[in-house]
Image (cartoon, rainbow, N blue to C red; front, side):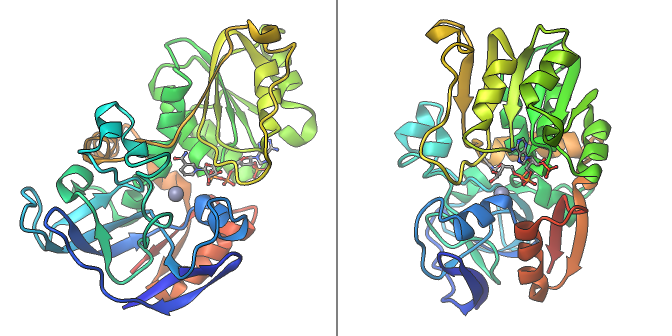
Amino acid sequence: MKAYAMLSLGKTGWIDKEVPQCGPMDALCKPIAVAPCTSDVHTVWEGAVGERHNMVLGHECCAEIIEVGSLVKDFKPGDRVLVPAITPDWNSLEAQAGFSMHSGGVLAGWKFSNFKDGVFSEIFHVNDADGNLALLPEEISPEDACMLSDMVPTGFHGAELANVQYGDTVLVIGIGPVGLMGVAGANLKGAARILAVGSRPNCVEAAKFYGATDIINYKNGTISEQALALTKGKGVDRVIVAGGTVDTFEEAIKAMKPGASLGNVNYLGTGDYIKIPRVDWGVGMGHKQINGGLMPGGRLRMEKLGALVSTGKLDVSKLITHRFKGFDHMEEALFLMKDKPSDLIKPVVVF
Ligand code: NDP
Ligand code: ZN
């Protein structure tokens, strides 16, 4: 079967692969639509998870099931499904402890395009089909469904990790598609003010659409000084980090009130250490909490987030700026994600 893969660090291309085997709890699926992710870019061009050879890329899609294993109860061939980027082993001890995304080891619930072949393929394999897939509601378009694989659950997990409460002032650093869903998640959780950090004009427009009340351009001065100026020197209650580098944490800590909490979902592709400013962190006693996490994945989350789209409470279509028809456009779409032209938020390829 035909697939688009990471050939080695810094190199991608089309390859032929064997059709995967379907185990008793698994499903084989063919994509209906797929989307490339900034994480694919970190993986290939920054080597952030290490060397990989001929690994099929991609972890964002919706699909049609073509085969299920003998123990799969709730799905059958022909079903159209939402597919989460993170597909944990739900029987693992890590999942039982509440950290499904780390089932089998740190980040090991993230299998597609990390520990096994991803979804940019004519056919792909899903472990634990009953635990990980969700039926694709008819009212959700295939393009929008792709945003439910990773962008929505990751951005919303940022709002969870930051512990956003009613009436909070929330700083969202980075308003690419993940940060935009951080803005939307914070808004749904009842944030009063949302300070969104970015520079691309269409991302700024989308941030306002999703609930940002103030915009900070990180190119016009430090984020912390701008956030403190907007809050009369008081600082913010919560921070969601969905962009920037290992140095961005310094800005975030400086902008946080005592008692504030930060949720990072940014994939730190480079740098050895994260900088925490000693004095601004209350010389170690400031109660400024730092969390970072991979989104949980799995079926329940897909169903719940899908319900927000089905009921019109969340419009994900504003994330999609580039639409391609045909798998042959996969490379073009991935390179858009790598090069980030100023009008890009997210491309989608419909098969
Ligand atoms: P984008 O590259 O589209 O967006 C990044 C955002 O960060 C942009 O708004 C950009 O601003 C802003 N930014 C860039 N540099 C800085 C800086 N120095 N200071 C502050 N802001 C800055 O990325 P995505 O939204 O696609 O993804 C965001 C991150 O989330 C990626 O690292 C991705 O790999 C990761 N991710 C994590 C997952 C998880 O489960 N934890 C899952 C999926 C993705 P500008 O407007 O100038 O471009
Ligand atoms: Zn992704």
